[in-house]
Amino acid sequence: MSLSLLICNFWIWPPQTAPALIPAPAHPVRIASFNANLHNTQTNNIHHWISQQHIDIIALLEVTPAWQPALYRLQQEYPYQYQYLSEDPFGMVILSKYALRTPQFILTNTGIPYFTAQIPPLPGMPQTTAPIQLTVIHPMPPISQSDFDQRNDLFSKLANENTQHPAIIMGDFNATVWSAGFGAFSHQGFAPTHGLKPTWTPLGGLPIDHILINSSKLIVTNSGSGPALGSDHLPIWADVNWK
Image 1 (cartoon, rainbow, N blue to C red):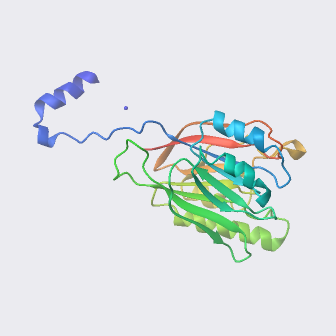
Image 2 (cartoon, rainbow, N blue to C red; image 1 turned 60 degrees about the horizontal axis):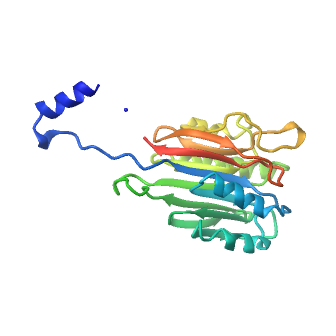
Image 3 (spheres, rainbow, N blue to C red; image 1 turned 120 degrees about the vertical axis):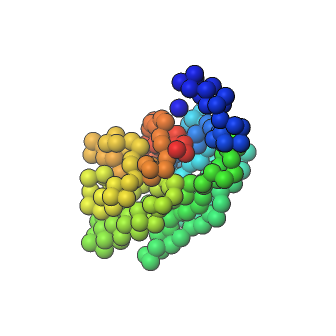
C-alpha cells in the first residue's frame, strides 16, 4: 500500500531483520455528529438511520432528559453511552460500540460542556497503536462579542492541545470554515472531512457542523451527510483510519 520486490526482500534478508508487518484494522472507525435539535421528536427515525449507517461512535447534540427512552432502546447497539442531558441546547450524548478511555465532560467558564475521550485501537489492531483523542464541542453561536471570543478561544485551545497525536474534533462548531477563529485548526494541521457542504439548513444552508482530523496522523476514506431527521441540522459521518 510490487509483489516481486516484496518476495525478494523476504528471500534476501534474514527473518530477524525483516520489517514487522502491522495488520490493518478490520474496518476504519465510522464516526458521526448530529445536532438533533432541542425540540425534535423523531427519535425512531434517528435510531433507524444510525443503525443503517453502521456507525461506531456518534455524538448527539441538544439532547434533553426526554431522550432517555430512546437512549435505552439504543443500548444494545451502543452499550457505552456518555451522557450530559440538559433542558437547554447544550446537552450531549456520545454513543459508542467500544469502551472509550478517560471519558469526561469539561465545563467551560460559562458552563457549556464539551466532551473528551480516547478511541482505543480497534479489534484486530496492535495494542501499541496510538489511541485517537476525540473531542466533541457545541459552543455558543457568536451572537455577542463575549460569545464570539469564547468560541474562538476554545478553538485555539483545542487545536493547540491536539497537534502531537491522532485527534478528531467534531460537533456543531457554530462556525463556517471561513469564519474568524477557524484558522486555528488549519494552522495546526486539522482538515475538515466535508468541505463546504451545508449542514445547517435554514437561510439556504451553512456548513457549521464539522468532523476535523489531524491530517498528519489520520486519513478519511469516506464521508457523507444524512437526510433530514426532524432537525434544522443534517447528520454528518466519516470513516477515519490510522495512517
